[in-house]
Image (cartoon, rainbow, N blue to C red):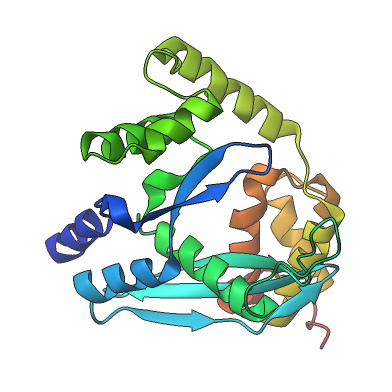
Length: 248
């Protein structure tokens, strides 16, 4: 990693201005904050004007539209996947979607790919440390929304977990994720990626899984799902693992 690329990453990781953060409702109640994909695109344009993006063809699996996005910065490419429900209906049956499933999946994939370079990664609500950082960051700049939302969610200074509690929470999350297996829909998506993007044969997929000590896609832990999907989208890697011609 050269100095120029390292400096770009540092700038990409900088927190966004408080006014760039918008609220959203969490599925289990409470609120959290996000940054629109347009703001993320602007950050990329500002820091590394020569950045590039590329998308896979959309794949429809069950109720979801799935698309892969590859962002390349200074010769370094990282791919992530985005999903969008084909229909977003309220309990009364009202259409709650904004844009087409492809547009929403593209935005989700783009934000995930950008996050892999550190853009808005501090907003990841799965980490207690990042929750605390966002609360304190916005509050220190006169934006009380995060503090208010954190109070509603039970995440406020004085009620934030101690270092030991955080370690135990992370350990519990890891233990639960270690035994959690991917869903049937995720297995279907994985096969679609392997066949359509990577050109894997059935034996090629099996050979790749064997390197993880797995015998079936049903045994894939959720913690390894994204990594395996990325490898299954790699056509050069497929040539290594395929033991018979890929089925077209």
